[in-house]
Image (cartoon, rainbow, N blue to C red; front, side, top):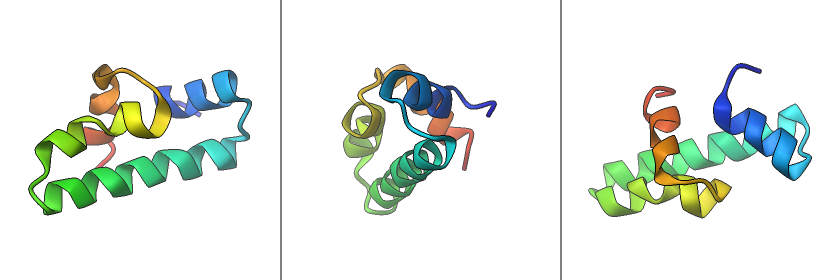
Length: 65
């Protein structure tokens, strides 16, 4: 898989590709929900809250949409 977040979840957390993809999609869904509700701060915290990653990984959500 050519996605930084999915690769990290697989290597760091020992998830299968399908499990990591499900976690990634959950984060994207949460991001979209925050944006729709006008919660920019919550959207910016998704990488940390969902995957334990730094906010730098926000790009991986924004470019996936």
